[in-house]
Image 1: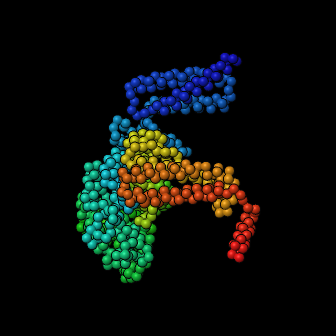
Image 2 (image 1 turned 120 degrees about the vertical axis):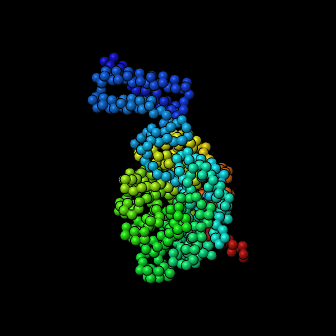
Image 3 (image 1 turned 45 degrees about the horizontal axis):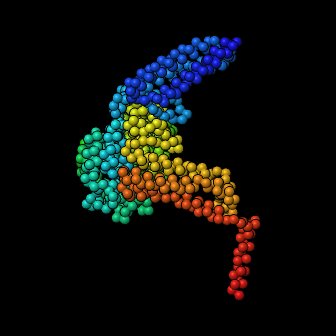
Amino acid sequence: MFRIRTKTQMTVVGMTIITLVLILFRISASDEVSPAFEKERDHSMQTSHSLVHKLEDISEVSSMTQSPKHIAKQKESEARIMADIRVRSQDDRIGRKLMLPNEKVHIMSNLDAENNDIKWSENKLFSGDRIVHLDLKGAPPKISYFEELFPLFRKLGATGLLIEYEDMFPYNGTLQDIPAYNAYSRSDIKQILHLAKINMLEVIPLIQTFGHMEFILKLEKYSYLREVSTYPQVICPSHNSTFPLITAMIDQIMELHPDIKNLHIGCDEVYYLGLCVRCAMAMIDNKWSRSQLFLNHVVRVAKYIRKYYPSVMPLTWDDEFRSLSTTELLEFEVPRWLEPVVWKYSPDLGTTMASEVWENYVTVFPNIWIASAFKGATGPDRYVTDISYHLDNHRAWMDIVATYGNKINFRGLMLTGWQRYDHFAILCELLPVGLPSLATNLVYVQSNNRDMTLIPHKVLDILKCDPPLPMSPGMGRSRCSFPGAGVLEAAERLYSLQQNLDRYLSDSTAKGWFTPYNIDHSFSNPSHVEHATAELDRCKMELLYIERDMTTAMAVVYDHYTASEWIETYIRPLDTKIRSLWEAKEKLLAKNHWPRRPLDASLQAHERTSSKSRTRETL
């Protein structure tokens, strides 16, 4: 019995040693290792395999003192350890990664660690163009930032840019009232196109021609073109001045983009249609429905492009097509004049986009583009990006591609990165904040692993990030040095500060002794007030440091208008809140004597006493 017990102990010791070796091996794993380290690693692996064999020998004896259930669990554990050791010895070059919570681990084995270009197998998830969206209606970057950003896009596998200029384009002549005061100049646009060309990125301009025309219709000069006089979103398609305005914008875009192959004309979220007198009369005269009124305008704009710029294919967002029948789409020859961009930014594509929509599209359109999101789609006031959410969105899109890829040609994927929800909305996640999400999703769609739940080492390598990279807000801090990484770091610090402050205020002490009632009546226990507000000093100082560091980091990427707007949107409200809490704390701690209850009665009694005192003084 003594020998058997000893061997049982040896089993435990052996398993412990193997676990420690495995942990050390995981920590030390790297894509590139020196020859000395290779030798040391080989010796370590030999030692591990030797221990495994000893473990196998011991387990036969130790089974004599264990129950069958215990033996089964032990063998299962041993099998996992040995399999992991073998996998690690083969896939060591994969490098550092972070796993999404509650999901099965899958290892990508198609990364080339010898250079900066990502090498993928022939059978990748998506073989079409990969277009990165630049939403310039908010936080337009400096040209100098594009000089660093475009090579990064190319390394990550992007093939083009969807540039939504809005009021940042330098319209001139009759359109000179449209550009923002800080709009890009003509030379800036030429430089952007040059940078795109040398980085082999196709440029697709996006110009709104129906809905989301707030940047024009907000102006008094163009307000008469609104479909609804009080709402500046949608332009009236029936007004005689609408088409000349739109074609003038198209002509100026084309003048500076003479070599483009595709032009995106927007046309999404046309919420108000057929509501003005002109549109009502047009529908009556032509016996149109609102859908036909919509299609007439879209096709008319597309025909103009095809007539005067025959080598350019118009693209439109698809959402207004989804409720239309194939008969309506074919009646206006929609597939002849344009290609739709099917967009959806949530992970639930299977439930939110009915199969009937896809069957209609398969019947009508020979070519389709699809659009996902890498940022700017989880809330108009979100300033940190949820990578896991957007990865789920891309995974859902790859399911769609796998389902319909043999029936329709998916020309390209547009990875949108919205900077505002519309022209009037506040800034959401800044571009540098969303770069880790963009990188992860670009790499994912080029892989052959549909269930990828890891951030490959190559993403961390290109972005110069230390592992782990947080997949969701609040899961940790990023430590990166890619262009603009300081913006990401400051945003994450602000998010962490906000979380900590919310946690302090949700503590039972704050809920019981630091409420608006306590503050209004200057009535609380000082010891509890001190406890509830113990971190206010630190929060106050941390916010000052965040503002300083964010201002410095944003100066590299943006002009001072963008920096000022972001600070005013996200730092000032929190600063005001902390100052208010600080003043409340001081007010409560200034009290050293408190009245009898009820407090309202005490206040009334105090007011009566004060009134009598003033009366006596008057007499």
